[in-house]
Amino acid sequence: MRKNAGLQIFAWIVFAFLIVPLIIIVVTSFGTNSTIQFPIKGFTFDWYGKVFNNESFMNSFYLSLEIAFIATVLALVVGIPAAYSLARHKVFGRNWIKSFFLSPTIVPGLVVGYAVYQFIVIQFQFPIFQGLLLGHFLICIPYVIRVVGSTIEQLDFSIEEVSWTLGCTKLQTFIKVVLPNITSGIFASFMLAFINSFNNIPVSQFLSGPGVTMLPTNLMNYIEYNYDPSVSALSVVLMLGTIVLMFIIEKTLGLTSIS
Amino acid sequence: MTQQRRLPYIILAPGMILLIVFLVLPLVSIIFPTFFDGGFTLTHYISFFMDEYNMSIFWRTIRISLIATLFCVFLGVPTAYYISQSPKKWRGLLMSITLFPLLTNSVVRSFAWITILGQSGIINTTLKNIGLISKPLTLLYTEFSITVGSVYLFLPLMVITLVGILENIDSEIMEAAETLGANRFIAFMKVILPLSVPGIIVGSILVFTGSLTAYTTPQLLGGNRNIMLATFLYQNATALGNWKGASVIALIMIAATVIVMKLFDWVAKRMDKRGEASA
Image (cartoon, rainbow over all chains, first blue to last red; front, side, top):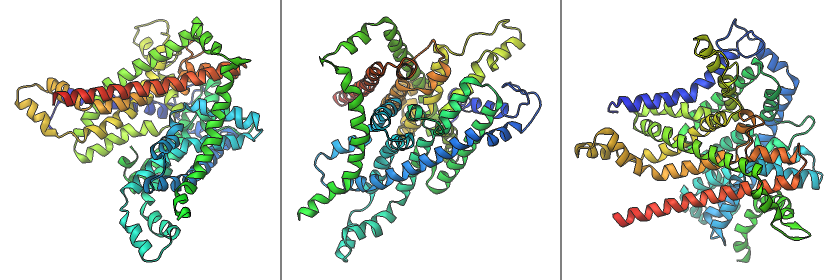
């Protein structure tokens, strides 16, 4: 690149703006003081111990993993066939149906959570867990439709025709020919849906009850009454999780595939 | 033959049914009652927009979203251009720096600004230590802190959207502009900026609608005084027990999102047409 000092300085100030606040959290998680300080005095790993021994944090962590995983798998199970149908068939109102599948992104997350809470939990007396799962399914489905859909569109249709000519049924072709060829799209949408479900707060905000609180919601409630380094420590743990996921994505698909 | 023709619809059905039952019906069930009080009525919406307090929340939400969007454009365009022009081996690292905050939980990202802007936060401690102030400045729980938090939350989205567009711009275009006598800054403003307009529009839709409906940032960085639409909805539904009021805000938020998207699309189309006319 040709040198342009002004642009370079500008860009690096922006990168610093993006990354320094997160580095500060990492530093404050090692402080010995019972409230958050920067710069820190002393050095300890105690806050990490406190996080892992905090039953409420750990329970909500497992719940978040569970919900994000089931919601993503559910979205894949109903989303992949739908994406296939939209990409391959002349469906009546195709564009309309596609926007319908993407519509959960237009409705604000808090509104989705509120509507699901009012309708599913209050009116129809579903347990909160189911409501939460459905809310998170709604977060996941657009990613599947968009990412898997564009992967199928890029897949050469003639290989399916060959498979039919050679005697495979449509279902066999789908399982033996289409699915193996779109695994990267499926994996990318799995990652995107899982991360976004795991990180989501607005949708879960109304959908929480005794023993059923997602980790981000739990952390948020904790922050409102506490200002101690265990918040920093938990944040660092979450950031480490992000790094691991980014590493996996980079090694398998390349980071550009999800941006 | 009929089975063949039905198949696409059969495999679409499960997803459609789930969306209808668990998204459309719930939305209708909360929105519908806001239009009926005995008979059809718009009272709930008229009284929302007549109320001074409600309107102050509405305008605060619009104001913060607008400022956050402008800052994201201002900071995002040069940064995205810088990334798109970097050598390949650097680009991965720079993209990771941008993606990392985006994939980090937004509670964590808001919390970072509590530790920076708070009464005993980094800025106040530093300013006190070097003797510039004696009393801590009120930075947290203000519109300023929500705006900073929103910019921080959405800037990565803007940058990544723009990198996708700017990567396709031929770098020779800049050289041509400079050969023809434009200095770097002018060339950037007259060549790169117009070419990145489609990306700016898509990015702005994401940032603007995102901040318009954000819950986490105003909740953590706004405090009780600086309520925005999403936190107002939550307050209505929980603390105030005003479910109809919450549903009114819900529809206003959906409508605002759709209007903003259509508006930006309309601007984009107009600019496209202008481009064709001059070409």
